[in-house]
Image (spheres, rainbow, N blue to C red):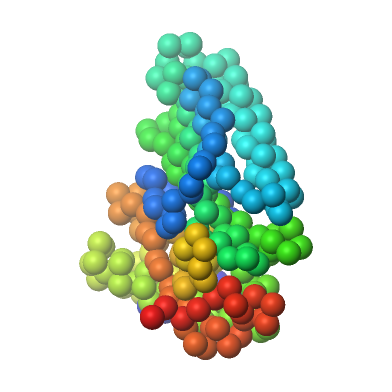
Amino acid sequence: MNSRNSVRKWPVLAVSAIVLSAAPLSLGVPATAARSETAHDGFTVELPTLPDAVPQLRSRLESLRDQARSDYDRGRAELAEIMPADSPMVTGYEHNQRWTIAGRTDRLISLGSETYSYSGGAHGNTAFDAILWDVAGDRPLAVIDLFTNRYLGLSLIDMRFCAGLREEQLDRLGAISEDDLWADCPPVEAVALFPTGSADGPFTGFTVSVPPYIAGPYSAGPFEIDVPVTAEMLALIKSEYRASFAVPE
């Protein structure tokens, strides 16, 4: 576990995926020419238009969409068995997801996902996901695998993420003691991490999306921390991916 300091002293060793938050959060570059699959019963998944060179990425997103549809139908059916048909929990059952392209180069495509869902209870939740894709190999790529030294590379992101998050926590929550529930900087596996850039230029940063209950109470909302690419990070990126990144001007 992390030490109770304002900035974590060692790198986290995993990168992942789906986490919960309270409200929709911006994911950087908006998707263009997006297409969506919508049902009038509260299910929506929006996928971005992708180049023909990455059929496996398209297949991955469509598979995730289909799994979400299956989970949604099963969950709603189970709820309808124990709740009246006109219950707000049943009529308000919802799954709305949007995948966006957070940046793209000839070699890499970075995508972020934001999902708002309501499956009963006092309020809905928002989930975040991220996918980094190697265009040449038409395969997924972990952020840590961008670096020649994966742990050092991730620690450089982690250090700046923790410092930026602490600034946001102080702004929203005030002073945080070492014994505070939110004192620890969350591990990367509890958040969504993805490179960010433009539709046709290099990635100049990484975005970390943090849900409520991870770095603050529900009322504090989600946190979004932007970490710029530094010269030190750039030097650690593998040669085959280095042209896809740049230090911001």
